[in-house]
Image 1: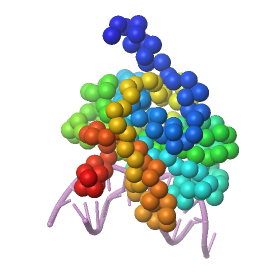
Image 2: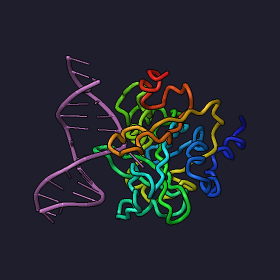
Image 3: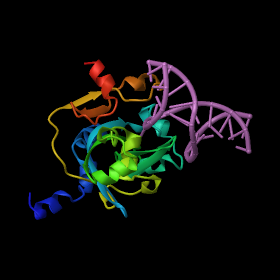
Image 4: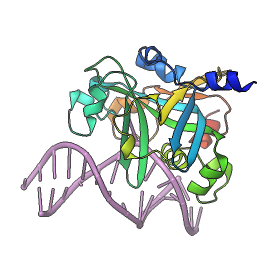
Length: 209
DNA sequence: TTTCCGATCCTCT
DNA sequence: GAGGATCGGAAAT
């Protein structure tokens, strides 16, 4: 691939990409390249696992029942905004989806390391490669994503999503870590690339065949 | 201001 | 597979 083609390839996706139904977008994000540029350098990875959170109707969503707080406010913005929040010590990254005032979001659960390996290994404190980005908290640490990214848009630097590859086979199943949300725990709104070693909770997936 | 509780991760068994 | 770490946001008091 020539440098020119490479540069074109790395352009952020247009806003229109994000303006599709949430479930469809969650699936479409698989294979896309997630890029974060920092003063220390650039790190990126291909998205291999996502989860859709369907707003007011979804008991597992922070915006369930249209709950509106300082934290969830960005979910009511137009598609393509960045929603970050902290879970214990970890930062979790979401893509805001749906039209304005429809507070959907898509959690990025795992990526496959692509660019900036040295930086990611350093940030992940020398852990082995597979452990760099195979979980939502882990990938944020590896890519250098912080709460400062809250409210940005994925269509421009320093945090953006670019075209990647088209996955061979996409799987779907129940979401992870939402045991206490009634029937919502069973909804098959988690999407992942079949067989990709960086998908989180791989063990569960394998055990269920 | 106090309490409660995670859209997680890591370190043990 | 289980439990602790550890802390900010949100609701209760």
